[in-house]
Amino acid sequence: MKIYFLLLFIMILLLYEGIICSLYYVPRKIKIISFIVLILMTFRYITLIILLIVRDQNYLYMLKPLVYTNFLCIPICGIISVFIFARKNMIKLRRIILISGILCLGYCIVIYNSSANISISNLYGYTIKLQLENYFYYTSLIINSILIIMGINLFNRRYSNKQGAVLIVISAVITLIAVLLTSINTSLDFLLIGDISWILTMDYALNKVKRHIQL
Image (cartoon, rainbow, N blue to C red; front, side):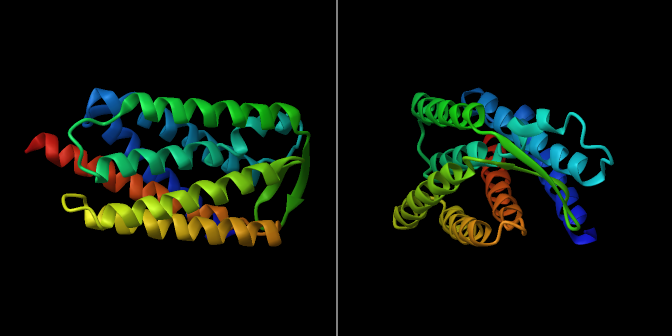
């Protein structure tokens, strides 16, 4: 449990860095969407901390929409990172917003139509499991597979950020493995490792934009 709490704390620090960077140092065209995504991820990890330390399960059902926000936010982080690492002068914001809107709609549909089961674990405190969470797993497998291909294509582009492309591939592979392991053994939350890898990638991407603006 101590290791789990440490990982949650590290994640909060990474999210804080990303939020500050997106709020003050990145162009307006990606400022809002990156800020919203990182805030939603922060809500997820605050929720996980609450589930870990709370003693009473009353009202925990209300946290259901926040527990799985990584399945909504991580793909958007991946898409934003791809556009930044591609080093294009014009970031297609409308395309990012469209994809984000589709993902948000799908997320809301699954959350609304899925009942939740609250149980207690020695490792994570209380846990919330959705009846239809497999839809999130399938979607995550598909999207991260696409991001792997996009990362490889970026690496082969002349002016792209090669390190960023490698980070995208590594993060997507880690998340794929994490999703598969979690679907096999639901008692262990491997998804935390995938989340950390993607937020690290996102922070790196936002800091690249920050340095470019300062130059």
